[in-house]
Image 1 (cartoon, one colour):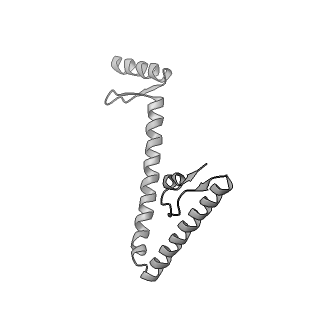
Image 2 (cartoon, rainbow, N blue to C red; image 1 turned 45 degrees about the horizontal axis):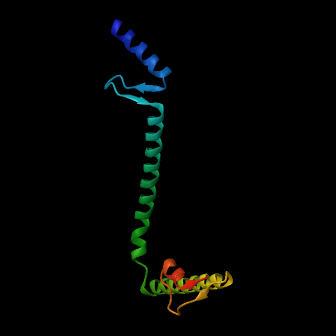
Image 3 (tube, helix red, strand yellow; image 1 turned 60 degrees about the vertical axis):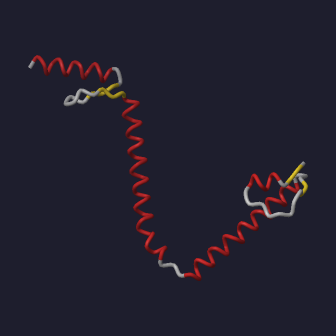
Length: 116
């Protein structure tokens, strides 16, 4: 009985200091650590739920025919070409001039072909 009273007094003291303790294992955890763990667990649950949704759709993506894949690849190539042309045009508007006619592959390569 005396031990239970001492334990409850200790718990009240921990609550006042912003910490909590598990009576079974004697681990003291601050409120900040507890909320960090809770945030991480919610994030992990969201990631797992998203991964499950992706896993549900994955088999259907494998069944896409070759024509659709070819169309998607052509759209991607056209988008890349338009993006590069648009970026070159915007650089020209800013006063840059072309050093080379090679097609740029990355943003760094594109910037290296222009000088002010």
